[in-house]
Image (cartoon, rainbow, N blue to C red; front, top):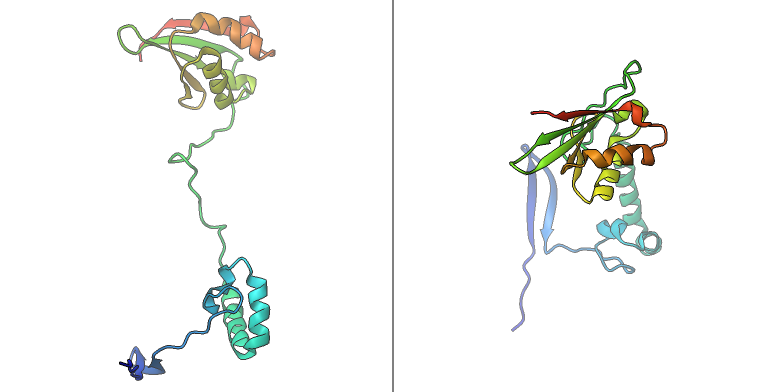
Length: 188
């Protein structure tokens, strides 16, 4: 039983205009290098070899593809106008640092649950210390969670106010103990 392939011709209409005749079955030209259809050779790891093969074996098809690529290449696709979202949701607006702010670090403690506390450190940016790096240093030193909340506020899980008095001047030499102030317990 031999299967017979019927050839159909269909006129493609676009907005009332007859553009091209498509005849079925379609004949597809495959690349001799990457064995994909020639329209997809540009995505092959051997795209340069594919171009050479197409130029030597099918120069008329190569010219047609180059004309199509030149037409697409003239389009202006720029990412300058697009605003990219950073990882982690909405980006934070960075305000300029206050130069007249007093160089003072404030340490306070708030109660989270009945027996759990959170230590809050503010004022590290007045000494040009990045809050993210400071939070990472606190988390490593005290083996707890530390996060930056707000522009210049670091929340450290646990009551580590006494240990911060020694750790901050030890880790950052430009800060002395006189520029650290303990606010005690505060309510949020």
